Amino acid sequence: MDKPYQAMQDVTVLSAHFPVPAAGLLPVNAFIIKAKEPVLVDTGMGIDSEAFIKTLKSVIDPGDLKWVWLTHDDADHTGNLKQVLAQAPNARLVGCSLAILRMSTVWPIPLDRVYWLNPGESISAGDRKLTAVRPPLFDNPTTIGLYDDKSEAFFSADCFGAIIPSPAQSTDDISEADLAQGMSGWASLDNPWVHMVKSSEFSLTLDRIRQIGPKRIFSAHLPPAEGKTEEFLKLLATIPPSTPSIAPNQKALEQILAQMSDED
Ligand SMILES: [Fe+2]
Ligand SMILES: [Fe+2]
Image 1 (cartoon, rainbow, N blue to C red):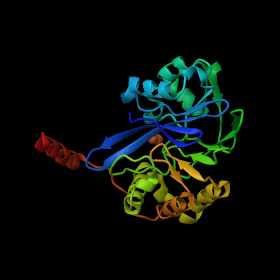
Image 2: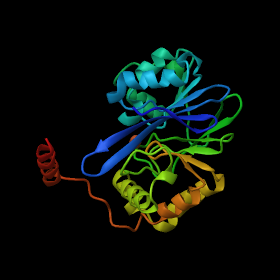
Image 3: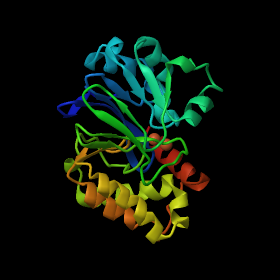
């Protein structure tokens, strides 16, 4: 885990950078929204375990959390969920019903602590409305991003992610070329279905985000971005007809392993 940092007054990032061999680093962010009813968005990677809880506690007393918002049930978002719920007895778990039920095949999630939400539905966090918004790209059918009308931020789950060359706390610290390349590659690799979608239809989902007009994008897999929404939407518009990214195969793995043994 990295040191937590503020993305804006009400939002703190609990950040990690997961090394992707021969490619770079994938940011893995959870967020704390210091709303009147405080919210934790996602719960990090299981590999971080105690470090995640320690980092969380350095920002907020988990007993003060009122909501844990799960963007989807992929392992890099649910890694510390069980521990978080144990430490945060006053928090309700917000998520898509399908995510909660799928996770209930692994461990018994108390359904009376759960709040099922579909895209378009909202909860109140006391001083702001939090609305579930399906991001244009998603790698999991349970995905609900979160639009916070007070911070005017869109917590976009995996959408707008990028593998980046070095750790960063703002997209302003990443070169334009690295950002464009990282975001395009991730968009294609993480969402192979997008290449089956007509550009004209995909652009309708981009327009939905345009209409909301978030000032800030807080992706789980990108450093915080301010004032870049239109730039990012334009970049995503280029993905459907682009050449699909291909995941590394065994030959690539052997090269990676050989390189690692050379470095030892
Ligand atoms: Fe995911
Ligand atoms: Fe993810």
